[in-house]
Amino acid sequence: MTKVCLISLGCAKNLIDSEQMLSLLDEAGFELTGEPEEADAAIVNTCAFIESAKSEAIENILAMGELKKAGKLKKLIVTGCLAQRYQDELLTEMPEIDALLGTGSVSEIVKVLKETRPEKKPQYYGDINAPLDEAGRVVSTGPGWAYIKIAEGCSNNCAYCVIPSIRGKYRSRPMENILSEARALAATGVKELIVVAQDPTMYGVDLYHRRALAELTRELTKIDGLEWIRLHYLYPDAVDDELIDVIASEPKVLKYLDIPIQHINNKILKDMRRRGTGDDIRALLPKLRARIPGVVLRTSLITGLPGEGEAEFEELCDFLREARIERAGVFPFSPEEGTPAYDMPHVDADEAARRAEIIRELQAGIMEDFDRSRVGTTVRVLCEGFDGDTGLYVGRSFAESPDVDGYIYFGSPEERTAGEFYDVVLRGDLDGDLAGETV
Ligand code: SF4
Image 1 (cartoon, protein in one colour):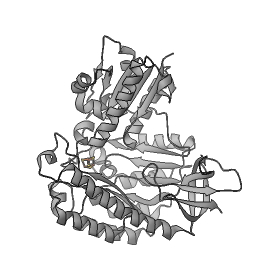
Image 2 (tube, protein in one colour):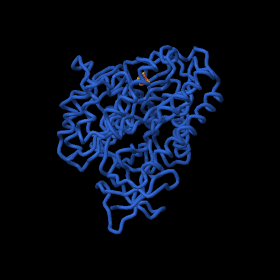
Image 3 (tube, protein in one colour):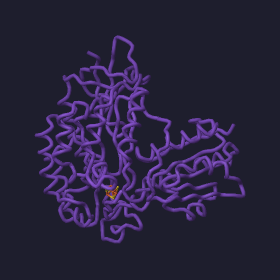
Image 4 (tube, protein in one colour):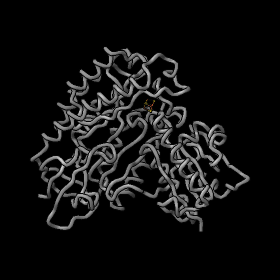
């Protein structure tokens, strides 16, 4: 039996594609392994939206190429965004690759694996604007939590972003399909469902001709077994009163909102084709804090965007000092060929990286203050397991989303179970995370 190892890179949306491929491979009788050294075939499901993601993808492909040279692997298949974006160029530059599968061809993974031979390098690039496949998944996260993708692609066309050209225009999944997948996940013990898409706030516009994220979120709260619903990647101008009401009034919807703002300067936002202004963002955040008491905000930011001089960067820093957003991911601007921003004048990569570092430090201080303010409080934690290094259990509260935020470590006199909730009183800091004990 052919043993297959799949390496999933990039975001949660790509991870779901990986999980769908794993399910198709499993159904087709392939044996799955997490160890590339033990595999006959490796699949690298890549990300390619900025330079650092492309480098990570290439490093992984090269590492698999080395295993092939050593005679351990027989087939190396590259899927996802890098394959979609570079196609023939990738095969020419990296002859160790045996097959490519674009983002519109996830469902062809079994076919491509069977067809790949030394003398044949199949490539499939299905329609990236086609309706989404409703494939099964081998959920690789948890225990107790899973992502759910409600749409694919993006039609926003921000000037710096290559995603619409890799992932196609925005396509919502029918609501009944999302709800039935959510019910099935809940039946397997998933308690926290993390809603993702490139832009979940556009959900429904293509299918139902109206924004339907608020309605979908309310329907998800009705599913027995689901206890936490977390919303990611909300476009700021679409966080409207209807959505705020659902978040504020439904106990199952976490008071944690991820709203990527990217910048605060009006001209930069306009030039980058972002909807809404910095002033709109400045008005939105206090409104959220007033309407959703205790809300924890997350955002993502880009430094060194075209039009960002010292004054615009200072404006961003001043805004962050004032807004005290609890969580932030910061990326230096990555000029991507084929996007309008690629040709716009901008600071060099070193300067963009220097500015990103300044913001990381600024945000680290804000996060420390936030963590300190939580010491002594009791939080509900979804346990993810036991950590051998610290001798403590590890989990997350509403304020921590997996992979992007920190963790909560906790001691307990009794044995605890991964995937279950526990009340934990927070006692202090543990290397940048929080630590406490069960109540
Ligand atoms: S909203 Fe903008 S940044 Fe986000 S995926 Fe769409 S085009 Fe890219």
